[in-house]
Amino acid sequence: MLKALDGPERVYRILIVDDDPDILNLLRITLESTDKFESEVVPVNDGLEARDELQKSHFDMVIADHKMPGINGTDLLAEAREKSPDTARVLITGFSALEVAKEAINKAKVDNYIEKPWDNEELRDIVHGLLTNLDRGEEPSLEYLHVERGGVYLFEDENMDTAMNSAVEKLNDGMNGLFVSRIKPDRLKKKYDLEDKSIEQYWLTRIPGKRNLEPSHLELLADRITRYLEKNDGVVLLEGIESLTRENSFERVIGFFENLIDVISLEEGILLVVVDPRTLDDQKLALIERNVTVV
Image (cartoon, rainbow, N blue to C red; front, side, top):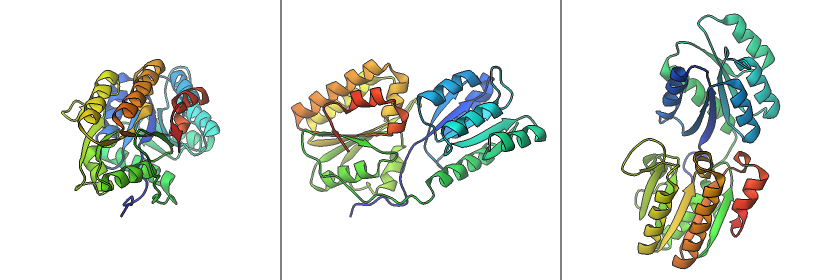
């Protein structure tokens, strides 16, 4: 039976902003090293750069230090709220900076604030709670699409339920599967009850590991997918186009994608690609949509 077990699986995009590189790196590591949620963390070191990031794409959460050059955290979070009211907003303040926190609550309507130095587990709990609130009311998708050999399908969705259900349907028909995702392989297997399925998995991450692939290594990723399809009657699920476009020029990503389309046609495999359309501008999304079936 096809099902997503306990709610939509998704990778949350979190923008973190601090002008201190040590604090920024600590914050990134704290958010990435947890099993409570999956995230793509985008670190920037000043408010003006963060403003540019907010104009380019959607984020589920923004965490900003208050005291920064150019634009302070409170003003930045106020702008984030104006652009995307559903984006969760967290302010980082100095110890006992109560007046700053009050201003942020009134001006930027922040969802929470964190004092330096923070407790890592408490920070993760705060972030997890806010992300859970974003998903409240969402039901797991039980839908799947009947996909054909030689086909490339682009699932424009915030989560991967429908794409995964479509892939599992082909696994149940006897095909093999290669899954590449920003979601940790063990979590993905448990989430979608894949323990008894014939699949290979790669984790799309900057963290080194035997079954890990860095988003910047497009040639290696293309080679792994090509070799798999040459040896297997397979369906490939690729989640994480957002990471690829961030770590590479868009021209390289398009070239990678067009090459995969040719490989899928030649080997009569199936390619399912998941992308959150809010993370790409209309022009880039239109280029990715060429020569594929948009779901």
